[in-house]
Figure 1: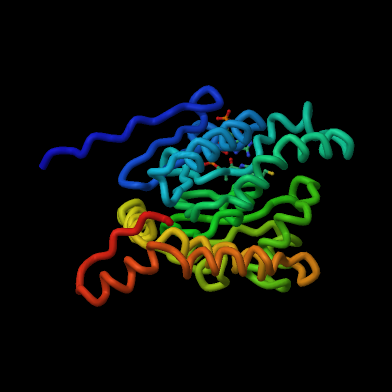
Figure 2: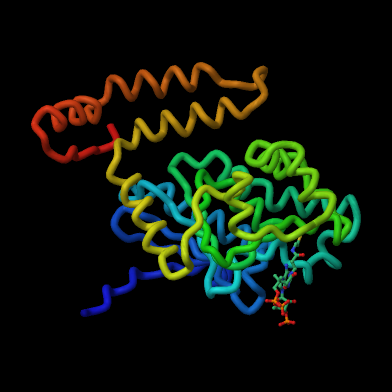
Amino acid sequence: MLDTPKPAEIPHADGKILHSVSDGVGVITFNNPDKRNAMSLEMWEGLSHALTALRDDTNVRVVILTGAGDKAFVSGADISQFERTRHNAAASEEYSKRSEAQRALLASYPKPTIACIRGFCLGGGMQVAMLTDIRIASDNSRFGIPAAKLGIAYGYDGLRHLVSLVGPSWARLIMYTGMRIEAAEALRIGLVDRVLPDAELWDATMEIARTISGNAPLAIKAAKITIAEMLKDESKRDMAAIKAIGMACMDSEDFREGRTAFMEKRKPQFKGK
Ligand code: COA
């Protein structure tokens, strides 16, 4: 059997972040396997360039984030930068500001995102994974937020996502102990959505991505916006945005195509309008 040619990978942050596109699926790779894909500030900036390129590419309907090598998704922030960039409260504030825009971009990303996780997913890596819409992990993946082992305050957004996934009690256990969690337990407590044997992980993640990319983009966007608004404090919810995307969806060509294709017993061809 011939190998399928690999799609071209566009480098960012000196090649430590890569992005590529195939079959309507964008892929972003954290590519510093020697450091277990630890995230430097430059990589956060590279991530934002990759996310922006895939956001603006009309062929891309879903984005997968993954780590290079078989050892880690992302092993957290690059601790070797801490002495210079995060040594006290003021420096830490500055550090957070530099990665804030990139985190916000992922948090409010207009297309569905999937984290494909093998090996270690720790600290800031958990934050990246929790900012995506869906987490698919291999049976060798391991999770943890070792902030208490380093003396770091994890921050509001990271903890809000953790609590919304696993509830306050597990969030406390994870944060107070800095413990490692195996894949099976991560699945049981809702930290990840599906666990697969390592050899099946990539194909299974791509299959989910392709299914999403074949579905109606506006219907997916309506679900994405509505769920994101639901997770906000009630006082901050943008009910007008939910209504607007609902109207756009129900008035769309794709809705017409969806019901016509059903009646004609054929696969719908969605255009996202
Ligand atoms: N920041 C900077 N460097 C890191 C790193 C991080 N978060 N995680 C791993 N590395 C580096 C190691 O220092 C080591 O560098 P070296 O080869 O120059 O010695 C290299 O990556 C390989 O790591 P190593 O510890 O030898 O690999 P391992 O497979 O035995 O363990 C981890 C992997 C991820 C469990 C371990 O490296 C670790 O605990 N990293 C820190 C995780 C952490 O605290 N993250 C939260 C940060 S906020």
